[in-house]
Length: 256
Image 1 (cartoon, rainbow, N blue to C red):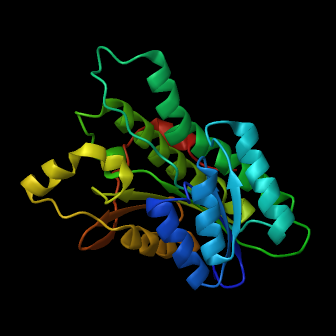
Image 2: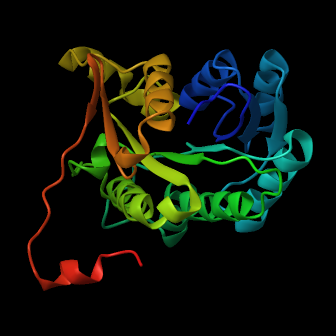
Image 3: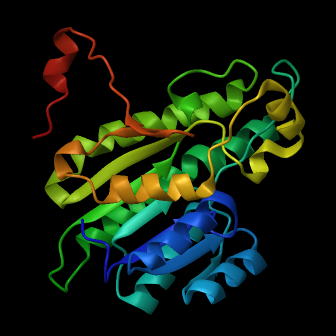
């Protein structure tokens, strides 16, 4: 999909990867709706790039729908949904409270489901004749290669990877591509107090600007690549190759 002259909605757009990508998308000629639970941060980024700020708790479907409605009212539609908002948790697996799991699932997983649904509805309701759209969701390397110290984070990111891989072929008929961005360890606030450990281990961090590059790569990729997981390392971006499990179940995996 050509990005120039199009409209993007970015969740978690007030900081880190979302902020870096919002800036990059404007450079690509897009109008951008910046969605964040921190309204001040969203406004700061939107003011900087000439976009629209919207405050939302993306774990709530009604608030996701309201963000899309505001973006459509302001810019006339949404062509790229970058579903990026995410959080981490650090409790012992045997001790975590239900509320902690519900919260990380809501932000990391449910919001991608709700945002993808809102994007499909937005595309299906178009009346201006434009075609093409993309859903790009931030997963993680932990959605491909499990991270034992963070099992709750891991399960939400596996869900995002699975959703984008399933939506890829499903949404071809709607003219929508779906992609997952799977960063390695990235320089964002989610690292919290683990930065000294990263430095001690000599881990080179992925930058938000590299994530932005990957989002643009995914959004503009050949439609035949829909459903791809783009792994982002400090040295570049790779398409992850999955192995298909043989068996009779594959007969059911054909989209009519």
